[in-house]
Image (cartoon, rainbow, N blue to C red; front, side):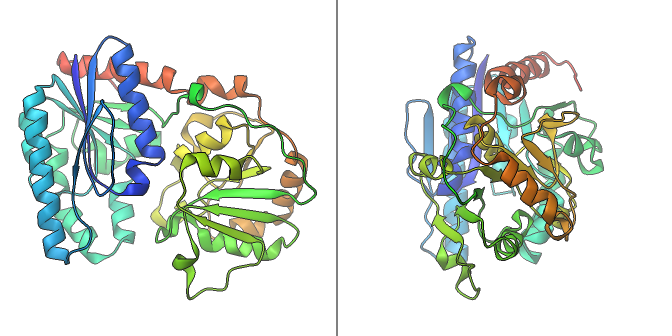
Length: 366
């Protein structure tokens, strides 16, 4: 089967971050499995590789000019997909950009649903929310099937209403590309968090509160720099690293006793996700603090995972438990044999391929 993996409107931190690595790994595994796969994307970033066709749009223009350029590059990308002549298109869902609908005339499209998108775009403001609500049905009803990264997304009425076959497959990473980091040795516990600014559901404001409540801990915030907090007072025990490449933040994570997942998903009415950053923490052997249900950890009871409630006061209500967990995990690492079957791409991509093969054959699967 010939597969075009398509993503669009990808900023640098996405295309060259964890999402980009996830896509490259999927394409590699699909090719190794005997299929032919290629990644097509529109992006603001410099993205290269034999398995990639990238179409760059500009960022330094007015809003209208920027949107026109995005549409122009998307049209060019769709023409390239047409020339590729795929049997299947795997599309990472996002907000509509003209002329995305043309893609659905080229081959069956399986859309990957990474979030409860209506809730998320409501948080992003009136313009994005309005555009998404006006165009969502126009695109979603054209898909041949969905891959949802969580059971919550798969079961949500905004997705089931289309009557499409849905496969649940949480995010995964290629553990072969990660080596378990040695346990750190330091007197002050260090906690790491990968999070972007302007994403209230990440709960960076809560991380600041935790840092103030635990002055005897050190915190490394990756993905957000000082420029994102010009009007805020930054606790002295938080170190802001901004967006850095994996080769850089691996050294930061090497010092972490605990990795922190998103802290405020309740703000977008989400309770279950499988975030890539948590898979990276675990791949490196770092114990994790979670304030939600992780799709691939449902029903597990690992001592290296602390789960707290998904609510506004979750850190305040669980401060003692958090402190006890951090001190208990200080200088320890996760047994990768326990988590490999749950988060390794080699397992997940075979499941995703089987679903696409069935969709291409006209079958249904849930």
